[in-house]
Image (cartoon, rainbow, N blue to C red; front, side, top):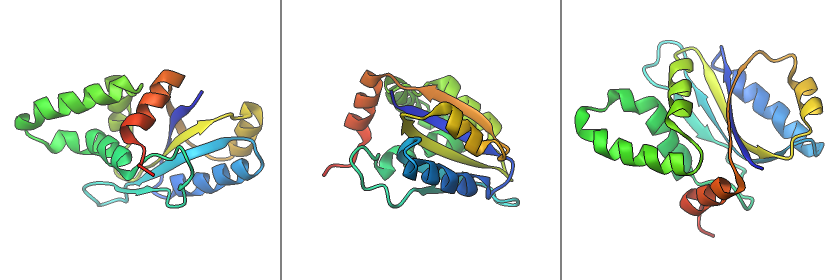
Length: 163
């Protein structure tokens, strides 16, 4: 089963550091990293910077459109007026169809603020005890939702880049 996991850090650079550790774990075959994106919100900035992992050309990697829409829904919705309500409702419904519900989105919005960073991971096949041991020295909070096989297929159908 593929999981969409969000790790939240209390510093703007925390997500980048742990991404390196996750990539090392993948090289050791302790986790399958399908795709990733980083949100970094430096102090004094009104909105966060986002970055999709550039080298994820492998089959199963999601498009920038997926990450862009998800981040827009999480971080920009409070800035939209009521006129955008119906469109945002439809978009939220599309994400719910692939296992990303309102509670998940609200939880991220409520927890990731200026001065923080977050690492969004699409993973599977984690050797949990080894991954946990490798990440024990990093300080982060976990926000996660697990996707069923059907939801994963739907996610790729809706958002995967066309080859």
